[in-house]
Length: 143
Image 1 (cartoon, rainbow, N blue to C red):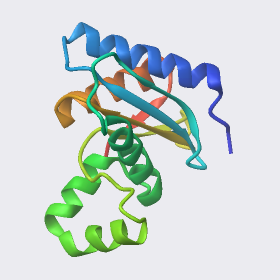
Image 2: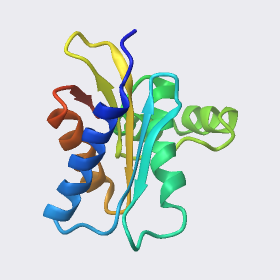
Image 3: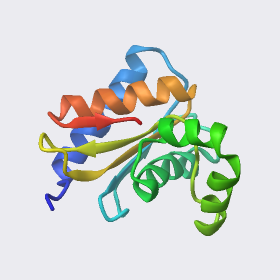
């Protein structure tokens, strides 16, 4: 398995934050996890609300835990609410099943980690995550 380096994680973070500024979004928190689920980097813009870090982590963690971007988890929650609820119970409430959690893959499709963004609408959060991943020359899989 290819590792997600700190330099690459920082590139993803910087571009994702810049995308939020460019789009004039509400303050964001961005968390990047490696394929093991360990935090590589996290940052909160000034003015974020209290639980945004946990939400960003939960979006990325959920994507890794279920092997799909959180947009797909959100869709699955619409179709199979009991399943997603049961999985979230097993994960001790750590999953956030809404868009904004995006898997990071290399060109060959190998899983490198996930990005979770929280602060604006879920769709805007996802846009920032994808921008960061793609700027690092990697494949974004939002679900």
